[in-house]
Amino acid sequence: MTQTLIWTVVALIVIGVYLSWTAGRLDRLHSRIDAARAALDAQLLRRASVTQELATSGVLDPAASIVLYEAAHAARQAEEDQREVAESELSQALRAVFGEPEQMELVREAPGGEEAAGELAQAVRRVPMARRFHNDAVRAARALRRHRTVRWLRLAGHAPFPLAFEMDDEPPVALADRPA
Image (cartoon, rainbow, N blue to C red; front, top):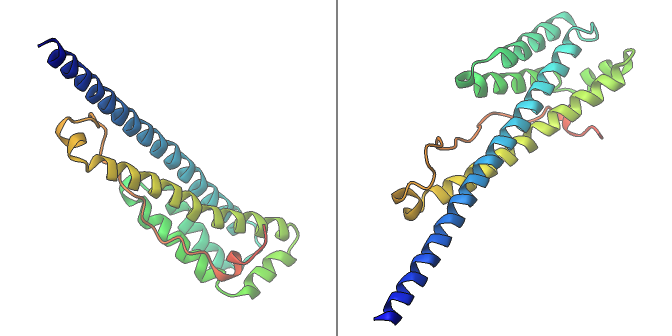
């Protein structure tokens, strides 16, 4: 009788430690998602800001300036449910304007253009990386949340189900190959 009681207590302790560890891991994944989302938001904001600065600098032709400015402004002002679409449209506008290397050469030749081109290239390259980190964290949390134990015992608490950030983040050819 005593031995059975000891083994039952040991089993309950092991189960309790496992559940506690799983809940802690899930909490850390959710924190990682929050940090990755903040980093992604910062990179998207930086890309839109640099694009707006370039669009208002007078270096580009008026049509290209308007296209870039409006797309960057829309991306900065987009509501959360429209953010992915607005950011994808900014990527498309950047590809439309900087699809040809000649356009980047015009920017580089202008006063302060070399620095502006470098900033834009850096901002454009960092967005896919930040998005990948965010989506990897989301994927890991989703995988853990799909386990039966996590669902049945509601170890995720009231945390919302994590959503990936899906957007078109393909950089323009003229900016993708630019050294940092």
